[in-house]
Length: 279
Image (cartoon, rainbow, N blue to C red; front, side, top):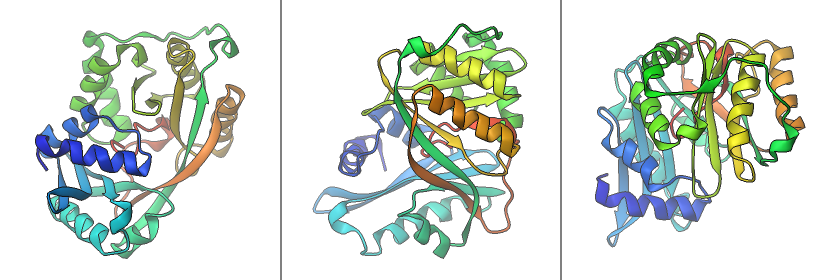
């Protein structure tokens, strides 16, 4: 897949009700070690698969097939291409929708933890004053943030984080030494994540600061809902706080890795992911 093919990928996103913009596809296509594959018929794109490479982690995403071409084996062929490119990576993962999960299990992926997508139209009046240390992130914060992220996420995604900061600085907040968050606009809603924090109080502080900047906008968050995310009580507190802030659960995902591979990083610090396309 080349830059000139992005329009075809976007057409499939719209046909499936997905949120990605041209900038998202461009980052995937142009990032070193990453890329995407497509299937064409009569000059039109009918399927895609993508791979984001974060040194030790290969992340498979953007598994899209034209609705008229589904159940033809096209998804399996595209996934096989992405897996061939990921060969040799210590860890290969993806986030599966319920519809896609049977395909991934046939390729020997197994479930790691559950995630839930929740959405809200933000009402800033629902958030009180915060007493935390979060402040707007600046480019000078990036080296420390990337270092924290390498530990929490388990691989180097510094290029992605720098891109998120430049794309939506209003969503980038940092609590020095404790955590950080990012976000980005989309076709249908804003996506808030990743939210990485040492504890729930820091995660709530970071998220509150960001959401108050997005007052009146529709926002989605993909949060970990099952082990090994964090202790059950803290995980429930996080999801209950989102609900009290106006978020409504929409649909589940299942984070999966190839059989025998362990989840990298420290899942207990990952309160919200960047989104299924970027992990």
